[in-house]
Length: 597
Picture 1 (tube, rainbow, N blue to C red):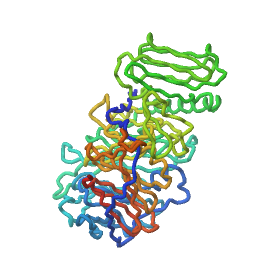
Picture 2 (picture 1 turned 90 degrees about the vertical axis):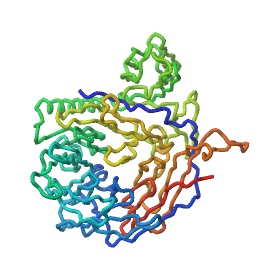
Picture 3 (picture 1 turned 60 degrees about the vertical axis):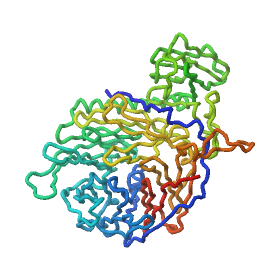
Picture 4 (picture 1 turned 180 degrees about the vertical axis):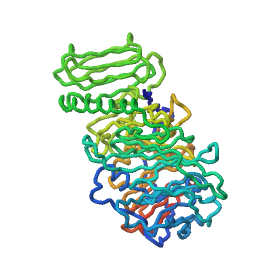
């Protein structure tokens, strides 16, 4: 049975004094280089029409970052050549240099998708040609050997169309072991499939061949496959290859394992869970949406108690309200009607000190905390529903934080772009040997924003929207009790990015000094973190002209005329630069901060 884990927000990383972004007119140095050959961009065929096809293949980032060398980026051109572009000087890009070429012509292959590449270590990379071939390449020490020829150390057939989405190199008994994850969307023959497609993850383990002179050659020693009704938006291998972490709208499950066949009882458990989900869906259809969806509620807290407010139908009598509070659990409902709230509390409550009050159309519940002064990161374990009134959104980019005593969340002020995903996404760890989910995090209400490679060789971070902010979470695979850490907060980025209807890519610098967003073409937005030094902070002035208490951060906008009307195909953010790829050019923005007086 998978443990239910919560994402614990670090309140110290939330800035109650942050008020807005202010447009800065500081120039951003921009330079570019002409590409010798166009980018290998494959358009989706008409029969690949689902949302997952667009998510997996249609929104590909064709520019590849090297976590071990921040001065170089890579792309694959139409001739099948892997091109490397290196920063030659502070404001100068070198011309593209081919470092590898695919051995066969793949452009006309049926069902082909774009090539994909992922760096496994300082000296190895994995490349999938989009036409059924997976390659592992020995690249040499890329950071110092700029002219080294890349050498194939593994070549094998994979299902088409596949993309390499993650990979790593780890120590094994006989040398370095490689772990690779390939993602594809394929047809699902099951009659129960709504779209006719499902997503599949192929997990390959490669071990070195014995007696090889020179760079090690590899062979597949283990092959595992996972499948699910929706494509994952986060996939990561654990550093030692014992499990994978997957986030998707609907959970994936292991369907095959060459080293340990999936046990029949495991399949039965999975089937039972799927049947229960279907029964719940059918029950919802029979009852009607209004009968099963809880009315919206808001909650806020002090050091001693938690207040939960519900909206009720005006004709709900007081005698029909049912409230049950235990130290670990809360259940609120209306007799003969809907359950308003039910689940495990995120903290312990004192039932004796708790009470509720009723007025027409409104129910207010006060939960006394069993442990005063301990902040609850959420009301229910798993972050199910509800709005925290301590940190809400108001209209406009120049919004203001409100004190805890005021309920800041107001559904009347939300726009269509602020709507939470309809499906309840989950984040879970799947063990590579037992095939079981060891923990599950409910991501309901927290929109996925982007992933972030914070350090070479580490699992990528995950950025989610929490109210108006964007919270960056770092995996802690060694900690079973608390596998995710709230690492940083990008103030108001969740709200701001939702208003950018033309946005295509969103990312942050590995050092987390800023986040960057690019539209489909021409424009790039930079959102700086508030300055750490009091002497350099921007502060909003009050109406009488004196400095106020609220902090503002700088927003910069770059309009790239050099890109013309060509859409952006790739986007890479480093601590010093933002790289953008079009069909004919690679552009770089020098974004390193200089001192401000």
